[in-house]
Image 1: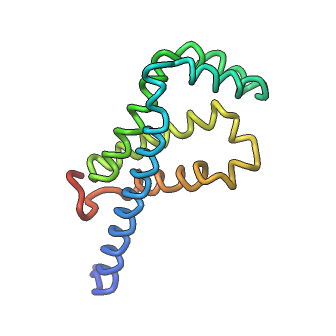
Image 2 (image 1 turned 60 degrees about the vertical axis):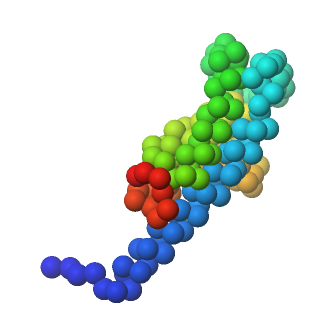
Amino acid sequence: MATKTRGQSAGGRRGAYGLRALAVVLGVFFIFNGVDKLAWFADSGILAQRLEEWRQGAGPSTRWYIETVAVPGVPLFARLVPLAELSTGVALILGFWTQMVAVLAFLMVVNFHLARGFFYEWAFLMDGAGLPVLGGLLALAIGGTRLPFSASD
């Protein structure tokens, strides 16, 4: 029968505090990204213009994704994306349903990178909104339960 030693239990707590700090930092990231997109509520043309810019230089699979999924949904996505980013940020900072929010945010970020065609570029590996954000969200999705200073989990 395995028993926990004092060091393992302390290490587990440190890991939980580290994940909690990660949740707060990612929450701030999502809030600032959401605030940056608040103008989309009044003018979905901003998103449509951005998608058109991405489409012009896109490869075939990215072009298909933009034309088939993103462009038809512009009126919805222009309101949903800022709201989702702001909600994600608040939920991560407060520690509210951290694992579920991290999974949904992970899917949202993957969707964003698919629309940009970013997965096919070396820049994805160096972009701060790429691999580090996806890795952090994945860590929270896996281990973000019962974290200290959380509203609920």
